Image (cartoon, rainbow, N blue to C red; front, side, top):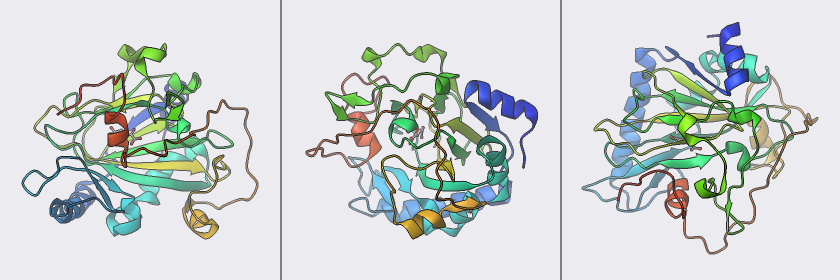
Length: 292
Ligand SMILES: O=C(O)CCC(=O)C(=O)O
């Protein structure tokens, strides 16, 4: 898998991309079978753990599994994918040939009650010394207008970094009443299962609730050029940090770029929220309609 000139130009201008037919049917069914196994285990759990997050209201009768955390750490189907040439072949023309995986997650959006993700920029969570970072989403279900597709504001990766604080506390979302963003210009990333979305780390994005009877499972991988150094410090010890190189090699020489930055502090010491969904549900001035 490699990108042509048109893809690359489109990404540079708009800050996002859809690439179709990246995962074949066999790969898709292996990933889905793996998720079914995790979901079955999570359904009988009383609380989330390092592998998955449960939403409030979760019960045996009505399981509400909203996120599988870092599936590449626990399951071979996803571990293989993060360094597979079908993925790194998309990354290399966009952020170079030395690449680190920063994190991965699988957002589940179950039918009817899949929660929204409020508008945000990933860069507000993890600024680096340069902005060669992006997120790749592998669609494990068809993503359409009704099941809570990822929404992006084209070109916003070239705009400001918006305040993600509420009352001075980092809250991980943009307050719609305190910004000039034209949310109506957002584009839904609609594509078939097996396709891949790419969005720039500064892109304004979010997603609405899943109003359909169909699930929407999206495996998100956050990648960085190996010479982009995290300004907030390493999230792992140095050996683990280096073990996350998925292509090329690591470096101790960060590349600096003059890029706008805001830092994601302070955190609320009394915050009860554990997941991004709980964070966002707790916001004043939410943009999306939230299920009960
Ligand atoms: O799953 C989605 O719709 C968006 C997820 C997202 O933006 C995030 O988890 O940072």
